[in-house]
Amino acid sequence: CKQKMIDNVQYLSSAPKLRLQLRHRRRMAEKAGGDGGGLADPEVQLFFGIVPCAFSAVDGVACPYAPEWVTPLPAAGTPQLASLKQTSLDRAKPLNHLGPDYAGLVIPAVPACDVEVVAPAGASEEMAAAWPTELRRPLLKTPQGSVSGLASGVRSALVPCKDGKWYRLKGCGNHDKGFLVRHLGGDGASGLKEIRGACFEHTATLELHMSGMVDAILAPLGIRCANRPLGWYKYDASVSLAAEGEQVAESGAKQPLLLPLVPRCCGVFETVGDRRLSDHVLRGLEVLLPDLCGPDYDGASMISLFPPGPFGPRGASGTISEADQTYMVYACGGADNPCFFANLALVELGDGD
Image 1 (tube, rainbow, N blue to C red):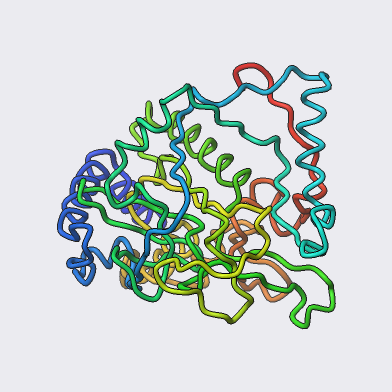
Image 2 (cartoon, rainbow, N blue to C red; image 1 turned 135 degrees about the vertical axis):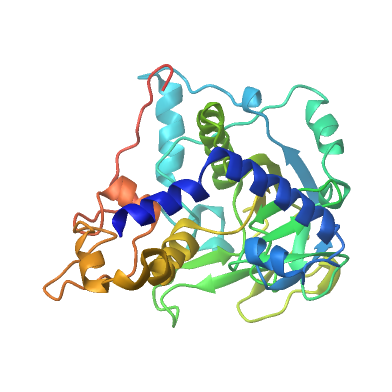
């Protein structure tokens, strides 16, 4: 039974099969046509999602990414590196220093130095001009709009373009309500608040850079990274924030300014689908186990094959609970040895790492 599972997974992940799937998904993007006309196609829904959404072009700038534009980190032990680290650590505190309106505002504090992307003169504009027409102006999810796509979670979405490819926008609005300010703790008693629906420049550039590194490692092995970095949007301050529960105006209409000193951004990636390891692959395999293993399937015996830990039995009852998020499994040693990013030391990478 276990060997039959392995054989099925190996077949599904084989390189020829993967190339066939990629060609098939390109045809699906062409079928969608970038105008939403093919989003109801069953095969499109199978790989990319079923929740339609609309986008409006709003004020801002498209910032392309290229790995050769990344500024190398200063040498270990230098004041410059110490300053970069301190900048990252300072984000663990609310942004009270920006003024009364920012009191209690918290933003993601990633335990890594910022990725600085500096393009040569004219290079950024030239590369942005080569982006698909639909993506050249920042897009924001709105109740109605001129561009159609599919929602992916709360703040992300997928857009099929006329170049025959799909693109992921990560941080293009909280559903179709734009960017929201949410008070933490439910009743707001904590005094803390956060911006929902957006990425920030330090998180967007870091994710673009790390996705590019992963793609560069996997490419020689014939494996296609699901998200390839294209760049990021930097929304103009006139693209307003809304109080939680308040609807953003359609088509990016200007509204009263709120927290303009914290620019909202959106990562832009070329993508091949919206199916995820935990939500879809692992859960899907779990549902398919009886069919994969045939009439001899024994659920209890199958569960016993999994080791204790994030994806296996735990506790006195031996039951499997919700799978841990991938980054927690990797960085924190699994649910049985929990820790949090705020307590992790910043990692210094050596030359070539």
